[in-house]
Length: 373
Image (cartoon, rainbow, N blue to C red; front, side, top):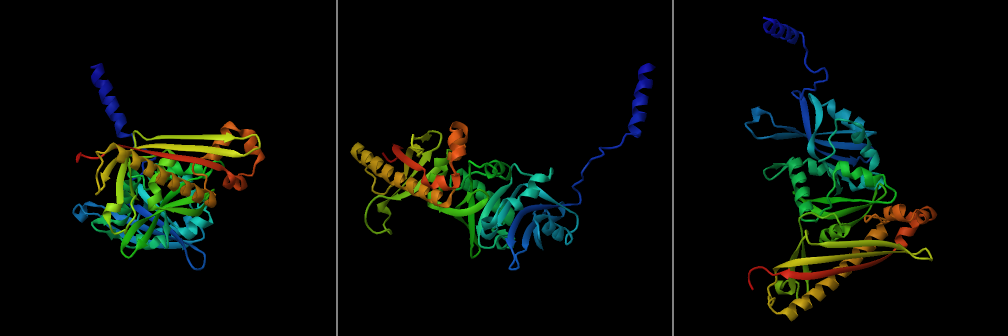
């Protein structure tokens, strides 16, 4: 009897129990998947937003609509868009944000600040890229092939990260190097050519400003040099003289990044000169070489030496571009802060970084050549 009375009492209490007071219904929310930021000719900030509708009424196929708004700040431009659409705007956790080169060259952080301050704004999976030209024009395409534009760009960036063409970066991982005086960063660099969205290369930053870029052919080696690589990296190099139209003058090889070895050491000499030793050991597999003869050990040794020389020169060119752009992507300043604090305090890093002496060596070792031999 006591058990029955206790159970009835608990049921009675449930009648008066309300739901979660802070419940946030998404029924009326509008899901934003891709955002782009440009400057108008008057210097206002223009935001272009892709809003996705994946409701059941679309028979399983999502549709999107594109809206834009201008303002003196990111928040104001968003409010202009909110005034045009029904429901509240929420951001997809796997979304993408595009900034035009003109916005990035001015200062990127003011156009990110509100995203870090909002507790419900996703950061951990959101991709960011810089666009050569107007970023909004890419969003206005609405779709490429069977994919909506936001999904296409996000998948494109993630696939090129796996191939080491782009450095891996999200809205969450971007903040620490952006605010670190001893570390710079790089972002994917895109452009629009006709109806296509192509990889332009890698956008380099000094502080919070876009200052230079690497092309797509330099991307994979740059990512390996940072020590933050993904699954594999592929290279195509010309190793024989003759016309560029002859495939036999080229070799294609790829690395198994699990076996790549990178070493970076920062040394401060007695006269204050800063030296950096950066070495890479790349075991590679030949995936295309029309001349073959890879069963000949002497030929393999010759190719190892030739490719090592080519890759070392490529690495040196990347470093020259980084120093010219003021982009300390390898965190040399961070090494000084941690291990040579007195030196760090005594130098103007903006002036000193271009004078750092880099000693670079890339060693290629052919360990596989497919199943031909």
